[in-house]
Image (cartoon, rainbow, N blue to C red):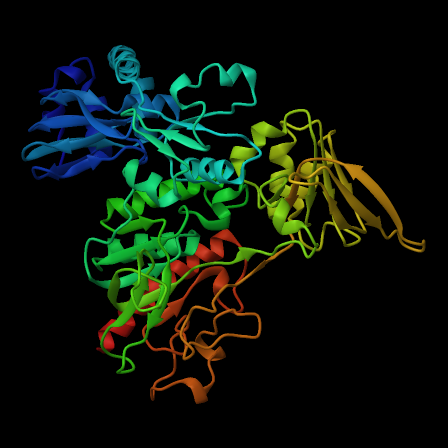
Length: 565
């Protein structure tokens, strides 16, 4: 335990009176670390520290690389920067040898600052010096940036922009149709087929696939093992939560995601009703935090891969399931096949896919003025435009709020008579306060116009107690949020689904389709050892918090399942 005598020997507290040292000793935690142990990691909740014994190194990640920016010796105090700025830890601290550290929580730190002007002065001097060190590191470590060259109207370019942004890859997009940006395009690539990707090492990729880009920018695309305790299919909020809890509890974990971690929640511009974030956070931010957390605990996360099939264990309740990933051309007419991964348990958390507009040319105009969901990378291209959105749920409301900061006008088209049926009240109130957002009730889009790119819509209005009327609208930006469907036709026949493809779990699995004497666990499917979590599950609540809950719950059930073996 920390004693007043320990503090009396530290020059940092030399001016603190005996009563102050007594009070500080009672509030402080005594932390012992072995070599290699983390005291705190970047982004963690902040605290104030004084090193009593040993040595610590300070690490900061910039441009995807971890740098050692300082080393602390006994007697040094640190941690004041995030406490005074009200942020998470701005750097990581790791013991280089066996060390002893005094830890002071935020309220006790602020009480110490108020008690002693001399201590407060030392703290502020340290803060000024350390902020300067961080500024120098930022200037002296230029960020390696990938260049993406392609037209806004090209769907492949739009897809790559979304992929790079949601996978946290620093990049700059140069649109050749924008004169100011076209001037920055290297002349040697201007005539190449677009989109073109120029990597930080000057390697040029012409019309690359997302998987090719993923490999070149350092994302993991291949599993490192052939056998896992848990294989998670789908990296939405449920899958990310399952990866965090599974890996943190020592299970060998693989998460497979075909596009970018975060799923549909990752495209949300602002989530304001998620527990613990009173000012809200973006879907990207939530996904990035969860991804770092999962990797920190040792989970493997592979992108641009998806499961082609799952073969259940031949012995129900025991043995390994086989998950076959895409990736390599087969030789016997079987299509694309890749690694075959053995999994003691599988969590299906593939979520749902946006439902396409049931209009004749919707497919041809997808990515060419018609978008599903609301990729944040498209927002800057909406400057000065009339933007239309179809849908009355929270996703549509969040997108309307986000686009209102760029577009001249945002119109939300809703088939029903009110917003209250599908949208949270806080969003309804926010939309009402936006002068450039209008909500159009009792209307639907009946036709899309344009050859190669959207140029307009036909909207049918169905006002109460009046005959329907049609309106022709000129626009080149339509975002669609008309619901989503589960795509589960690739799963084995033995895994039961409802008439819409959602996976049955727990009590929804009939006895006729269950092979064991025990009942299926709460999130267990009709195949023992295969679980479902999140939006893909029959009866799920389509909310971020419930997805996170089901993902974490599935790991507890997996422990129960494995314990029975």
